Amino acid sequence: MANITRWDPFEDIDDLFKGVFLRPMRLETQEGAQGMRIKMDVKEDDKAFTVHAEVPGVKKEDIHVSIDGNQVSITAEIRREKEDKQGEKALRSERYYGKVYRSFTLGQDVDQDGASARYDNGVLELTLPKKAASAQKRVTVE
Image 1 (tube, one colour):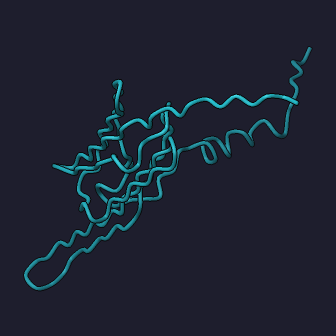
Image 2 (cartoon, helix red, strand yellow; image 1 turned 180 degrees about the vertical axis):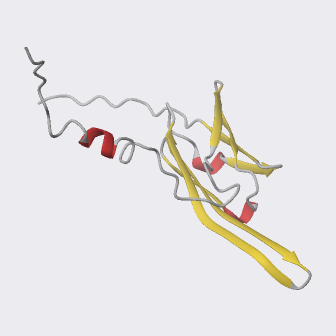
């Protein structure tokens, strides 16, 4: 007797496309620009939140912080240029310009007038005092 096997014409298509759509792609190829993210530590005490955000290689003029109630946003513009020269002839020149953005929500509103920011050695330190809780207003139903 002959062995009978079932043939599926679509069985090999999976091998043809294997990894093409699922492979993680990285469009940025410049050194140092890959995976640039703002990494943060957030601490809280009775009076304020303290945020330490890593933003290395960015000028302090290119960092912007905005506060809206209990939502805080940090935006930084990154400019990196690299040029390899041999004598007066440029062999390779690479540039990367971009923005990184991080937004987060705190457990309580922030007093915007008392907030302060300090940038030193690639670390942005935000001191965000908590806003005094407003008195609850009770409304009577008529």
